[in-house]
Image 1 (cartoon, rainbow, N blue to C red):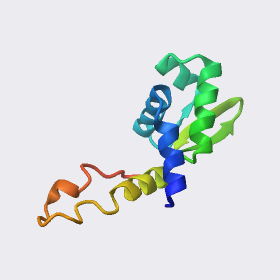
Image 2 (spheres, helix red, strand yellow; image 1 turned 90 degrees about the vertical axis):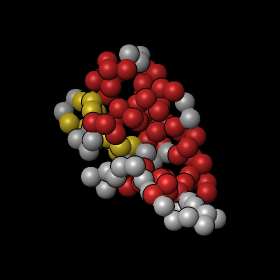
Image 3 (tube, rainbow, N blue to C red; image 1 turned 45 degrees about the horizontal axis):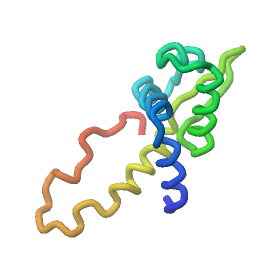
Length: 111
């Protein structure tokens, strides 16, 4: 991942509602969630939710698709893991110890 792409993704997450949306969708998994259900769960007005979903989608962090009259959103786990890999790429290089401090706490089954 290039620096500009990482900055774009981090900027999209650097807002309370967007971070809440992304975390909710990560917890839901690859099946995603309808926009209306996201709004209901997080108590976000539909017009504000649309704005935030667009920001996350434009940054490449969400996938969306339509089923009937519903639009579903799910995290792009490949993009999420790419960002995490970018952030931790050089973790502990300067450390004399090679311990578990740099290992991720949990890995995504979907990725």
